[in-house]
Image (cartoon, rainbow, N blue to C red; front, side):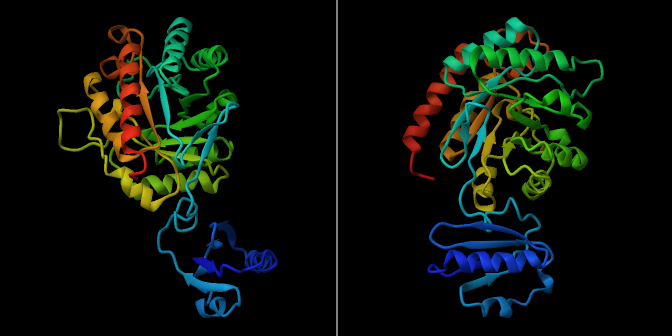
Length: 337
């Protein structure tokens, strides 16, 4: 339920109303600039709308049927801006960021070389996998703790905040120095993991599952937010369809739809969407044109020798070209969204 207050409502009236609502065991969320919007989270079926409308400072009351509340734009009309790392890199609310790095951390030389290259091209967040979920149990599954240590070295060398995927709540102590926690597509509905990660109170990037709806993605974000972390970034990384020409099918329509449904930032992963390096650029430009908040792109200094997903990884020069073109597209499309 949301309660819209009259523009002239005083702070004292707001405080009195909030105290009354909290006394009835509702969680209260305040938002709005010209008018204050009070979001009530809890079982509002026992509340009489007429009683609330009769309060002097109340202009209107509306019941919200969507099962997600904290992620819902109706409760939080302004875009959420997520700040990442000591550098406080901002994403969302008009702040666009490039996230780049290798699919998997392989060596100190590799991750530092790539980190320096993507930073020079304009990336502001370094990605790299330390724990890798693989379809085959015989495939390279990451360097684990050593991979996290190497990511921290790259952060120290370049100043870039780091994002990497967590696969198990038991690994949480290892992620103390990770700036942005990634939940991969396969764990999008691992609800116990989502709750544990939410309790870390760190920014979280959650990828849409291979065959999940946007509402299911938002409900997963709700798990994280309800557990204590309000700073969630949604990632569209392609869904599984009948099409076999690409690794996945990029649902570009997810961006405008999510813009209406939620206040959370939305980024696109063109690398996993197509699985082919030469198609990453056109997908990145399409994402930039539609007004996405960021791109997460795989970059490797020697893709042919990559231990994971080399076929979809850009070389540093190719990433530099994509970054330049994305900036041009965003400049042309500014003010259109």
